[in-house]
Structure formats: C-alpha cells, structure tokens
Image (cartoon, rainbow, N blue to C red):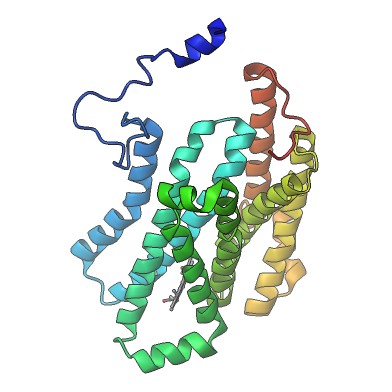
Length: 305
Ligand code: HEM
C-alpha cells in the first residue's frame, strides 16, 4: 500500500473520539464525538435569540410580548435559512469543508424559530381557528409563510442520516433543493408583510440573489472562479439597489429614484447595496487568497461535481 494511503489510515490524535462521555449526537460535537469549536460557536449563535426573547419576557413583560416574539422569531427564522443556503457556496469558495458540519444546525434553527413564530401568531389570534384558516387562504402574505414553513418541515424531517441512506445521495440532494424555494417564499412573505422598512429586505434579497446566481452557474457548469465572483459582486449590488427602489415604490409610494439615489449621496449612511457589495467582494477575495496561498489545485473555472 502506498505510504500516502497508509498515513491516511493511521489514526491521529485529532481523529480519536473524545475520551469521556461526549457523544456524536450533541450539537457541539462532530461525528467522531470530538468537540467542534465551529459547531459550539454556531450553537451559541442559534440559541442566542431564544435567550434574548426569554430575557425580554422576564425583564419587561411587554404588553405586546406576543407581537414582539412573532417579529423576532420570524426575522431569525429568515436569517438562519439564508445562512443555511450560504453554507455550500462558502464551503466551496473558501475550501472550508468543516462548514458543512453546521448546515443542518442552521436549517433546524430556522425551522425551530419558524415554529415559535407560528405558535405565537396563533396565540396572538387567540386560537381562533376559523379566522386563522381564513387568513391562510385569503392573505397572500400568510399563504406564502405557510408554504415556506411546509417546505422547511420537509427539509427538517429529511435532515438525518437515515433519510440520506434511504433517498441515496442524489435523491437527497434533489429533495434538499427545495431550500431555495423555501428561502425565496420566506423572503416574499417578509416583503409582503413589511410595509415601511425595506432595508433588511433589500440586504437579504441581494445576498440571496448572489447565492442563487452562484448555484445556478455551478448547475450549468459555468466558470465560478474569482473573476466571475468579482463580476457578480457589483451585479448583485446593482440588483439590490433596484429591489430596494421597487420595494419602497410599491410599499410606501416613495419615488424609487429618490431612494436609489441615497446609495450615491450617503445621506442615510451605507445603504444595503454597499453591504452586499462588500460581502460579495470579500467572498471573491477569500477565494483568491485560498487559491494563491493555501491550495495547489486552482478553483478557477471549477466544475460542478
Ligand atoms: C407558518 C406560517 C406563517 C405565519 C402564519 C406567519 C405569520 C406572520 C405574521 C402575522 C407576521 C406579522 C408580525 C407582526 O407584524 O406583528 C409575520 C412576519 C414575519 N414573518 Fe411570518 N409567518 C409564517 C411563516 C414564516 C416563515 C417560514 C418565515 C421565515 C423563514 C417568516 C418570517 C417572517 C418575517 C421575517 C416577518 C417580519 C417580522 C418583522 O416585521 O420584523 N414567517 N409572519
């Protein structure tokens, strides 16, 4: 057997399971039962909104507590589903394979906050099921929310090793493509609900568009090297400006060019499009650094596996 293969098979200190009582099922351990700092940090992050909501509940006892929880949990569910969508592209671009360890956790966190959101919405409606059903069928903003959550439930139920074995890797991947319609529908629900403040909507739309473009480019075997990523960054930013203008025009009736012009005058600070641009440029830069300094095989024009 070649020496390289023998070395691969030799157990290392790193791959040895942790000695006492740490199981691979814990949210902060990897499959070998070792403590994973990455998983621990992400676990703390996904728990933080719950701690925050409980703290506000305990300290303030707001009269509008139910509305507060509906809003907070909805926003966090949205953020975590976008983060889950971002895992695969970032893992490939940064060649940071360990990121995959947290994709399931982010998806399940999004589902968890989706359930909290739904439960507190029911509470806010005093469990008036007739009214709730009527809303689900007649209000597009609620209908999109229900469909998004249903898709997220399918993702959650199949997010385990048994489903991967039963569906086969390709079948499982096909099923998990529905994370994209789930994220887009959640965003649509968010857009239809918000009537005044579109900054976070514009930011999430721009990031989602960038991630979806990357996935589509890979799907069609188009080049996805650093040059393409650099070109994609200003395009995503411009699209964000367009979406921001469109949102404010339709939601508030404000003249779209007036809002879009703020991106140039900076009168309202850095608009979402700039944050999208910086985030996308950093991603492209990470890819260059990774290629130049840490990798022997160039990622330029890398093809879908
Ligand atoms: C299961 C069906 C759903 C129902 C019945 C529902 C219901 C609602 C309601 C009533 C609001 C308005 C809250 C308020 O202004 O007081 C809202 C807002 C929101 N929902 Fe949902 N939702 C559902 C699913 C989802 C899902 C799956 C997501 C995200 C993944 C989501 C994300 C949001 C966001 C981000 C907001 C805006 C919160 C804000 O104004 O800051 N919702 N939803």
